[in-house]
Image 1 (cartoon, rainbow, N blue to C red):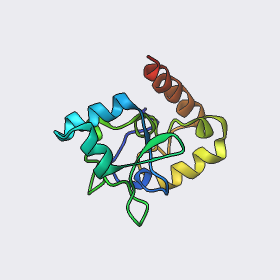
Image 2 (cartoon, one colour; image 1 turned 90 degrees about the horizontal axis):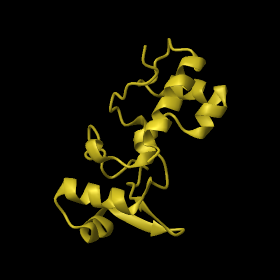
Image 3 (cartoon, rainbow, N blue to C red; image 1 turned 30 degrees about the vertical axis):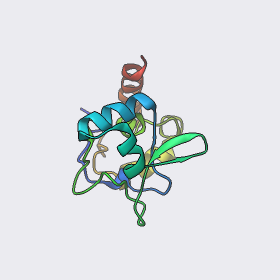
Length: 127
């Protein structure tokens, strides 16, 4: 039983501030969109606090979300890791909130099953 299966509903694509992207991710996203990294920066990103972030609209939704993720195959690490963030992995209450707000989180899954899947996902992300 999977603890999480993305439904591409966009719930996790909302949030003030945007998602930070590393330079390698910027190159993959630009290539996927068939634009230059400079165009990606100019048209879709903001640089602040020493990092590049994907821009959000006035409502806080990621600029790439339009009835689904427009960069899903090349989405940045924070998006790939959802909902297996440290705050979720350390605090059952945060996981309970995610379960209520994200249709991709399997409501019949136990917290222990969630942790097992999360550890596997995090290990697969380590270069």
